[in-house]
Image (cartoon, rainbow, N blue to C red; front, side, top):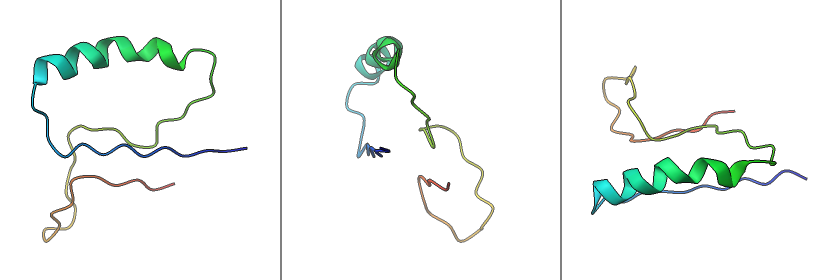
Length: 58
C-alpha cells in the first residue's frame, strides 16, 4: 500500500535548529522504501508569472 505524506513549512524561526534536525533525520528512513518527490531548495521558475514556492509532479 502506498502512502503520501506532505509537509509544509510556513516559516523558519530558527535556521540553526532546522539545520541540526535536518542533519539527523536521514537515519529515520533506514529500512523503508522512501521516495522523495520534492524537497525544499532552489527552483527555476519557467513561467514568468509564477509565484509558487513548491510543486510535486509524479
